[in-house]
Image (cartoon, rainbow, N blue to C red; front, side):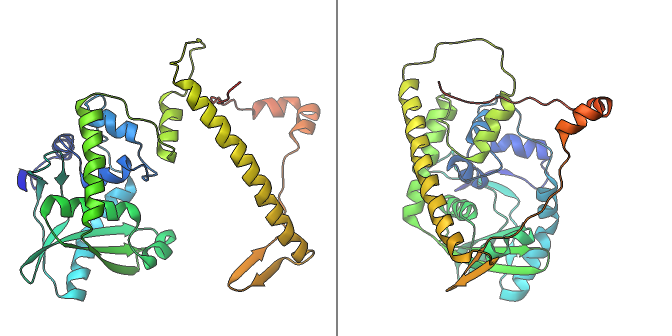
Length: 309
């Protein structure tokens, strides 16, 4: 590896600009299609200079940065290991598109070890009790590919009062897959300028809904390969209907066991069929009896409905 740039005195704008020169650790989950917050399309537009990377941190990311020193200090106190901040953007010499901006490096018995600090909400406590989330595993494996490290420590402060520390060993098979995936994206999509193939992630779905929220009313001719995509869409739709019917049958069987009971237990499972009450405004009656009030509170929203005929 080599040092691409020292980051200590860089502005956030400059740091983001350097990140467009390659693929960073936080980009890997996006390319893999498992990042719920950012689509591969947005990443592609940023890396190709078609849009400017977001310069405003979310509040979650902002406080994560503020709490990083606390997580690092707690890790050192608990383990006795010294974490050194490097303040530099590292670049793989073998694969120059691979960049790494690690939270810290550890010299453990003469070996280089990665340190990563994370924060998460209390809702993620069960996830962190079981291990490191998949997106972060990809991130540290990417870092190990760049730095040559054989191990990484991931420390997390969850819910503000639960501390977790997990060890991730280098997985050369996973790293080979990461390099292949990143290389394809960089060579084909970024350098080649070819638009990424859409995936089914929530982030990509949200991207299309947001970027193309309004239609122009025109009709266009689609490429011939769209026929096979339509067939696939309809085939999966039929499978979903079949699965939904089977799922409903299983639910109804369980309901036949519960009958009037609200909760049933079997083994370590808890089956609930709860009574739910909610209040609703009778809009039909309100429109008829109080049309002026109805109109004064009426709001209009629009969206695009997708279908195949």
